Image (cartoon, rainbow, N blue to C red):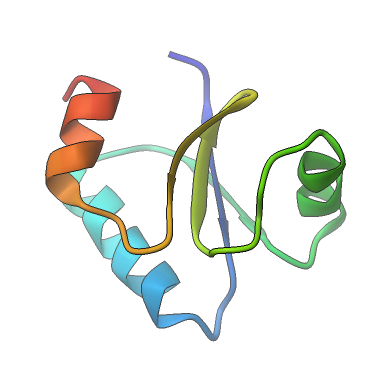
Length: 78
């Protein structure tokens, strides 16, 4: 699987929840701030960043908003 990218914001309770779910599942990812140049590049490529956090794999949106461990297990085949 391609490297996962987690777009988040420090002041976001959904982002904290998302981190906890990803940690619980043992999902490795690279985390970037929603205000970073990298996030701006993702948005320019059409990745929606309106509802944080956002988890992507390359060009594909995997999850956004309040993460569900059950749905992530299915999508990531864990």
